[in-house]
Image (cartoon, rainbow, N blue to C red; front, side, top):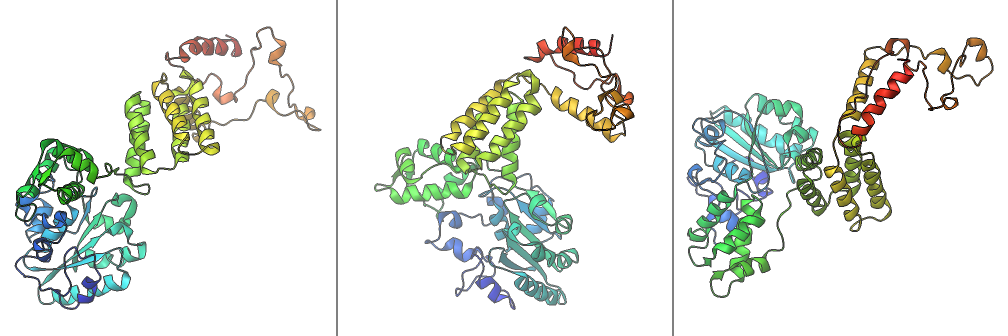
Amino acid sequence: MSEGVGTLLDVSDQLFDVPGEPVEPDRGLDAVVRRDPGAPLAVRMRPASLDEVIGQQHLLGPGSPLRRLVEGSGAASVLLYGPPGTGKTTLASLLSQATGRRFEALSALSAGVKEVRAVIEVARRRLTVGEQTVLFIDEVHRFSKTQQDALLAAVENRIVLLVGATTENPSFSVVSPLLSRSLVLQLQSLTAEDIRAVLDRAIADPRGLDGDYTVTDEALDHIVRIAGGDARRALTALEASAESSLDGTVDVELVEASVDKAAVRYDRAGDQHYDVISAFIKSLRGSDVDAALHYLARMLTAGEDPRFIARRLMIQASEDVGMADPTALQTATAAAQVVQLVGLPEAQLALAQATIHVATAPKSGAVTTALAAAMSDITAGKAGAVPPHLRDGHYTGAAALGNAKGYRFPHKSRDGVLAQQYPPDELVGADYYEPTDHGFERDLGPRVGKLRRIVRGK
């Protein structure tokens, strides 16, 4: 354990240290935990070298910043950002083995500004004797702005090399000055092939099940499926299933009995929230009803606020459907009312109905384009005086000002529409709304053209 900050590591999340037990200096802080047969399978199977890492090859190529940092030659602070079970802790563990550096670990769940400053002060003293410190902060997105600010000078002056791990997009959770001083490296969800390789290794490796269990292909396929790209979840499911086996065989029925359900990777406060709702919106816009229902189910299963979903459906009904099917907005609004008056779980059906309606409706962005064009003219200063004949003529003195004088009442005409100037002088002849030939707008287009000709006296 590093001199001067032992008390900090004693209150860490024990990813890298086991208090009270000596650590072999040539095997890294994680070595004791990995060799403990009582440790969780996911911990025992944590890669001991870069060669054992499965996945994330886009970050581990020859000469890459992360590889150089792990090998002890890199000098950049990094933020490891990615879903659970993709290797953030593994890479941090490998950093603890890099030669020529001291490694300190803090958890944002337990450390405060005082602990951060204590590590920095010890790191500053080490630099005087040519020794560099790598500071790993797990769950760095949970640090407050004050805690993150306390790191800035030390990171900028390389008193410490910061390695932060987070499941949330740093753009949303890390202060800009710290973000600009660090490399942001995004870890990807492991593929099905990657998860299968992790499981195969765990079954055969002496650190894992050591070949003591026979796992059927169907069982492995099921674990891969429910893992959702999360190696830790896959290994946990394998371990739970093996522990339930009475004869050393793990089949799909045993896995199903040992594991409740697939993980739903979704964080209502993080980037998964934004990614999933973005995919939902784009699926609605793209008329892929099945994909839209998938993302709807994903949000509902993860506990997303149904009012948020209902609001998005109402917005999309106008933004992407508009006048191509005016009833889409009615359906979306009705679904929002069901959410408000009935609540879950019954309101899920109304949200699904609205999702299907919006996704399958003919699409038109004409409403969005029309409003944007009108607002663009306003921004450009094209907001002239209201024509006198359209001004309010109900108050005393209005007639003397010429207000409402000459106004022609449309209902007195045979067709209910007549020639008359409505826009300010600067905007006479401006066309904002351009109907498409999709859905209802196919019939609306000719009517809009006819109305314009009559109103403009052409």
